[in-house]
View 1 (cartoon, rainbow, N blue to C red):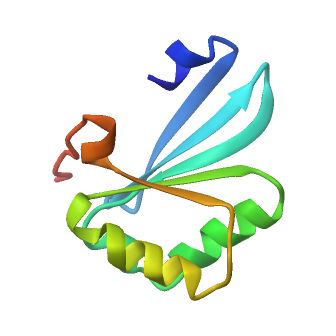
View 2 (cartoon, rainbow, N blue to C red; view 1 turned 45 degrees about the vertical axis):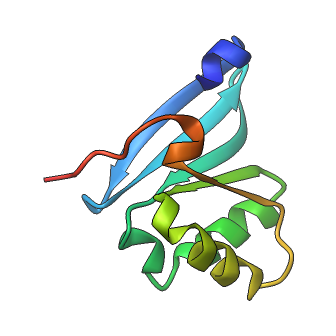
Amino acid sequence: MLTTANPDLSIEDDLIEGSWGLLTLRERGHLVGFEFLETEESWKRPDAVIQYFEASDDGYYVGVVVPEDCYDDVTQRIYTMGELPVVVLTYEDLGVAPTQLV
């Protein structure tokens, strides 16, 4: 979906620690941002919000995609760190379903 909206965008995907995913977004080869694909449990890891903050503080776009049931808790946790320019979306908002990782 992202590359359809912006054909100059390339996406690298990584599965981290078997429980969450990271999309690295580049436009014409230049790093522009990250999307964190979280599960019901992975967003609770102690360094999650710090990772969002560090990327955002460095001037990159940061998106966090979570299951709908977690949206309010994730948003509240992010805002305890202050007003970060972080976009929080749900899988349901995007019309996709998270997969179970084995």
